[in-house]
Image (cartoon, rainbow, N blue to C red; front, top):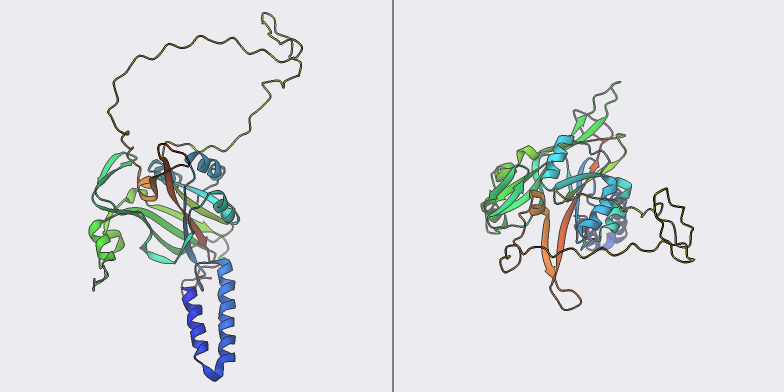
Length: 354
């Protein structure tokens, strides 16, 4: 949008003939205004309140991804804790990340390709925010069992609006309410939207185009001055995976090589080398007996696990050849969604809030 505006201004200035200096001045003024606006929000020119969406793709392995994101798991997410746990049980995790750390987080996530940005703003009706790939009939795992889905695609719907903060002194402060809910959009509606020859637009509302996972509807409330300016990061992850921050190896239990070993306790035998001060290794234990042969596995690769809702929507597994000959390596591509709130300063019933 911004590029088209600047291109249009440039074309208009070129066609002004004798008024070229004035046209150039107008173009430069608009370009400077757009540049200043993009520093605050690179997605929109003129938007002052609402929600901004960014999503990126990373191929970082689960263990390394967890090491990067584990530090944020204790930050409070501005939503109901029970709902957050339900999202986690269905393969979608929300973590709150300080706004000033978003750029650094992106640098640590080994991003594949560009970061996509979308300005949703204030949208009281459900809009399509993030869409997964279209597939045929398939089965996904929910928190309460397996669910069979017809052909279609999973997507994330979002809506947002400004609400008043309960005032103590009639301050008129505002908060931003953002709601999210997953949906399975049926194949008929996917095809209708993709048909370039369709003369009549889709008349059914967004939420009526397939199964809405209503129990997973999450309501987030962002207000100024509450726990600092945070963004909410949505990550697809196996519900059984535990994120762990990297920890150093403690050397308190083992004395360094060359250091004297403390004397043994009564009844204890100490084994030391000659002159080195380092303990000798314990004697080797006898080899464990070979396990009894079990039932033979069927030929071929193992059956893939049934993905959770979040994994089916925002995660894909592919194969790639390594540098050396051998079996191909599995590569996991994961879409990560970032919700950035733009909270207005005040709430007004009539007119703009800002």
